[in-house]
Amino acid sequence: MSIDNNKIVTALSTILNPKTGLNIIRSKMVDGLKIDGNNVTFTLKVPPSDAAIKSELNFACMAAIQEVYPEAQVHVHMAGSEAGGKADNLPQIKNIIAVGSGKGGVGKSTVAVNLALALKKMGAKVGLMDADLYGPSVPTLLGMQGERPKLEKLYGQAKMRPLEKYGIYTISIGFIIEPEQAVVLRGPRLGGIIKQFINDCLWPELDFLIIDLPPGTGDIQLTMVQTVPVTGAVMVTTPQELAYVDALKAMNMFQLSNVNVPIIGVVENMSWFTPEELPNNKYYIFGKGAGKRLVKESKTTLLGQIPLIQSVREAGDGGEPAVLNPDHPAYPYFMSMAERTLEQVNLRNEAMAPTQIVKINT
Image (cartoon, rainbow, N blue to C red):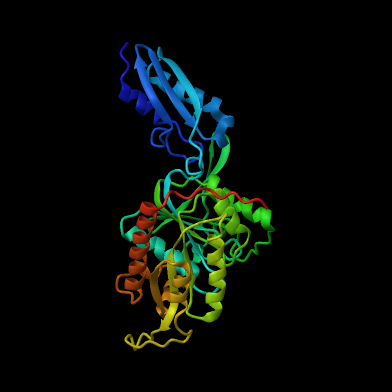
C-alpha cells in the first residue's frame, strides 16, 4: 500500500483546533509529518490550556487517517505549543487593537465601528469585539438588535460563533441579553465574560480584531491585557479639556511599565461642528487642541480629526455607519483615520517585538 502525503494532509484537515475552530493543518499544529511504508508519524502541537483533550485529539487524528488508509500505523507525538501568549490565545489574529477613552460620550464606539469597517473596505479581514459590557453599542451601530450568536460543541465544550455584518465578525453582550436588561456584575464576572469572548468564541483568521473598550481604567481593561497580547491602543478624545484629562489617564494606564501596550495614535472626535447646509463652516463648540496635546504626551501621531456632523449620529442610530457610504460627508475623515492607523500598526510591528500578555500581581 502506497500512502499519499496529500491525502493524509486532507484527512487531518478535518480535525479542528479546540482553541480556534480552524483545522489543525491551517493552525500549524501538525509538524514533522513523515510517511514510511504503512507508518505515518507526526507531532501535534497542543496549547497548554488544551492539554486535557490531548487524548481526544490523538484518537481523532488516528481515526481520520485510518478512514482513508485502514491499514496505516499512525504514531502521534504530543508536544506543547510555543509559549508567549500569542500561540495560546487568538493565534489566528494578526493584530489586536484596543480602542479606549478616559470618559464616556466621546464617540469611542462610533470611532471603533467605523475604523473596523474602513479597514474592511481597505481589504483587511476584520473582527470587532464589544467589550463595553455596561453600555454595549455595537448591536445598535451595526443594526443587529435582537440577533443571537450560534452555539456549538467543540470537543465537548460550548463555543460561540461571532455574528457577521457588513463583512466583519462581531460579538457583544448586547447579542446575549435583552436590550432593556441592565448588566449588574462585579469585577470577576466582568473579567469572566471578556475571557469567554476570547477563549470561547470561534474567531476566524483575521488581520485585525478591534476591541471597543469601556471608558476608564477598570477591570475589563486589565483583564484584556492579561488575556491577549494587545498590539496597540487607539485613544479617542474630544477637543474638550475634561475629555483630555481623562483620556490622558486612560493612555497612561497602557503605558505603565508592567502593562507596556504601545499607543498607535490618537483620534480627536467632534473636532468641530459643520452644519449640513454650511459644509465649509467650522464651529469649534468643544474647543481646540486636546487631540494634539494627547499626541504630544504619547509621542505618537494624530490618526484623525472627525467633525461633529449630525448625519454621523443618524447613520449610527440607523445601523448603517457613515463609512459605508462614500457620499457621506464624514467618509473621507474615517477612511483617512483607518489609513493612518494601518500605517502606524505596520510601523509598530516593524520596530517592536510582538506584545506579550501582561503579568500583573494584584
